[in-house]
Amino acid sequence: MAEGHPGGESLLFLTDEQLRKGIEAMFFAYRGFTADPDRILHDQGYGRAHHRAIHFIHRSPGTTVNNLLDILGVTKQSLNRVLRALIKDGLVESRVGTRDKRERHLFLTDAGAMLERELSTAQSARMRAAYRTAGPEAVAGFRTVLEAMMDPEMRRHFLALKESG
Amino acid sequence: MAEGHPGGESLLFLTDEQLRKGIEAMFFAYRGFTADPDRILHDQGYGRAHHRAIHFIHRSPGTTVNNLLDILGVTKQSLNRVLRALIKDGLVESRVGTRDKRERHLFLTDAGAMLERELSTAQSARMRAAYRTAGPEAVAGFRTVLEAMMDPEMRRHFLALKESG
DNA sequence: TTGGAATGTCAACAAGGCTGACATAAAGTG
DNA sequence: CACTTTATGTCAGCCTTGTTGACATTCCAA
Image 1 (cartoon, chains in turn orange, brown, red, yellow):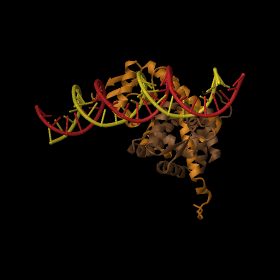
Image 2: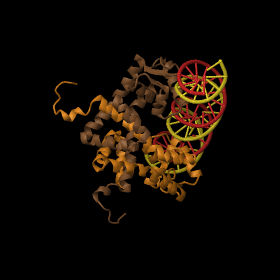
Image 3: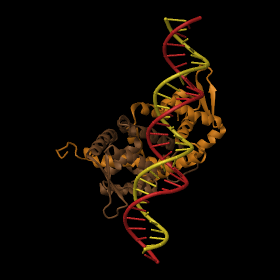
Image 4: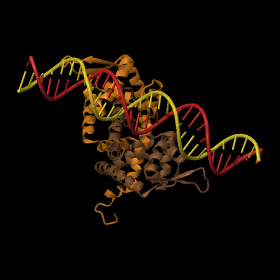
C-alpha cells in the first residue's frame, strides 16, 4: 500500500478506512431514508414492501405483476401477498390484460394515489433537506456513486425509469 | 413552481423529478450494497442482522450490548437472538465487565474476525469499484448527502465512530 | 388439439423485526 | 441495610416479508 502509486491523489481516497466510512454512511443514511414513510405505513398496518409496490405502480401505471417482480427483486408470492392487501383495501386496482389475459395491469385508485402522495411528500422532504444542505455538486456526486453501486440489471431498471419520468 | 424564484440555479435542481430519482437511486443502490454480504451470510445460515452485529463489534471491540443496541436501533430481544447464535457458533465472545460486572463486553473471536474480513472484503470491493468509477469529488458529495440524510442521533453515532477509526 | 411456457394465486414455513413480562445481578442511594 | 435503578438475558407471542411448493389459467406453437 505504501508503494509509490502513480497519480497519488487519485488513489489516496480509497483507503480501507474511507471505504468503511462509506459503508457505515450507507447504513445510517438508509435508516433515515426509510424512517418517515415507515412511520406513516405502520400507522395503517402496512410495511416497507407496500411502499415499494405503491411507489412503482405510481411511477409506471398499468405495469404488470411480472414487471414489478423484476424491479422489486422479490418472489411473486411475496409480492402477491402485498398486492392482495392493497387491492382488498381499495388502494390498487388490478385489471385483466386485454391483449394477454394472463397478465394483470396494476393501477393506483384515488385512495392509493393519496397515500402515495403522503409517503412521497414525507420522503422527499428529507431528501430535499439533505440536498439543500449538501448543495448541487454534492448531489451530482451522490447520484453518480449510487448508480455505480447498483447491480447492472438494477441500473438498467433505474435508467429505464428515468426516461419515462 | 413557475414563479420567479430567487437564486435560480440554486433551487432548480430540487424538482420533484430530481427528488424521485434520488429516492429510486437509494433503493436500487442499497440492494447492490447488501447483495454480496447477503450471499455469503445466507450460505452460513446467517442474515443481515448478524452482519450488522459483526461489523460494529469489529469496529468497536469490547463494546457493550447497550452500546450496540443504540447503534443498531433494534430491540434487545432481537439483538439478543442474533448474539446468542454468534456466541454459540464461536464467532463472538462475551466477557463480563471488570469495572461494572453487569455489562457484557463483546469481541470477535478469530473465526468471527475471519468472517468479518470476508464480508468486509466483498462489500468494500463493490464500494471501491463504485468510488473509482465515480471519482473523488463524487465520493465527497456522496458522503455529504448521506450524512445530511441521517437522523441527528444516527449522525451522532456515525461521527463518533469516525473518530475512533 | 394437445403439451409446454408464461402468468398469477394460494398454502405453509422461516428469519428477523416488534411488544410485554419477568428474572437476575450489580450498582447506586437513602 | 433496604430500595431503586441499570444492564442484561429470556420466554411467549405477534407481524412483516422473505422463501418453496403446488396449482389454475391462459397463451402459443407443434
